[in-house]
Length: 484
Image 1 (cartoon, rainbow, N blue to C red):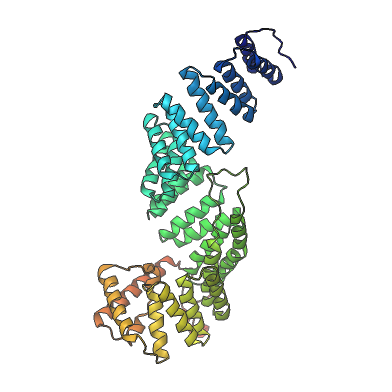
Image 2 (cartoon, rainbow, N blue to C red; image 1 turned 60 degrees about the vertical axis):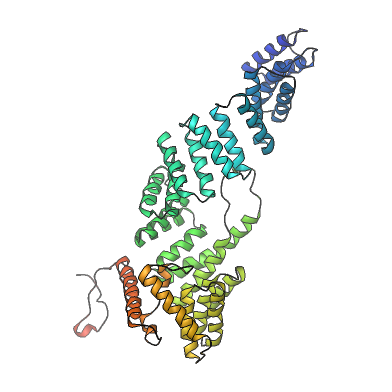
């Protein structure tokens, strides 16, 4: 259709095109802009106004071309700045990230104090994987305008990716100062505080996020992890159960609920159920991880991590071992090892299952493999010494006992585990084992104290279920029944 105004002056037709744009008449407006840019003497401003109309009506590819023509024809600085800025937005939306970076840098060459350009440059650099530069760009934008909550949040996410959780937490707090209702920032603050070991702070932040988004399973799951680190097993179990009530296929929540239940006496069968569900569901996560994200999924969202699959196998093995199903436990540990041959904990646990199955030589080989992978994986050293003693296999024993004595002294005197596992796993060394090892009485006492502390913590975490009383008279032993 032709423009409804006749003129040989590009500016006249361009103005008419913009009037029609403001009126929402796309076809008529674009007809006038096309005629305007087709006239002799059409300059940068004529192309600029055409680009803005095309952008308004969603003709993004045409708008990118017209902004480019406007800049090539030269524009006054104010309009050139706007053209580069809008072109950068269109290029980013089209996935043309390198071009978008160039456009935002062109904006900043004209106006170095434009906070929005620094911030959007930070967005593009983050999507290009240039995280250090992204943090710098966000920081400069926020120095110029500290009130942009989303920029504080995105900068914090980049800092998390750089493994700088303390700075990330500061960024999320700044986002909340700018917008106290920003629940994503509350959630992210909770995650950063978990990374920093501040379980109480994490629980507080995640609870605040849940008050705004109570139907989000992921938040309940994260809160469960915070409660677990606080030693609040019952609250952790309730949070993970709430996550599963909202999303029964949430494999991570099944796995972590299994972890909680495995610490609670009498809940072994439930722990096994949830580990088994995690194993059943986790392969789908692994398949999803290999697919490219759908176009509707924002680039900033994390993709599922298939490592849960091997962790779930390992945890299922531990649950099966606790139920006395040692052959099935060994199969689960072997599955975890196939997925990750250097998972030393799975080799150690496989050895423990093989010991129960009456295969001490295979068990010793598994313990030795765990130590080959990590010579400071102390639980494997304990079990290897025990297994070799059973087999009367004295090869390497003296050197291993010297290493054991040195390690126990480092741990119990100085709290140093080296590259070994956490205290929770390490404290599993039974004091009885040290009676047959040539270690000092001082070391034996330290081992016994460590084990006692762990057992007391486990007892404190376990609820007393009323009524708790011993049977008497003709009732026999055990817990009494009935109330009263």
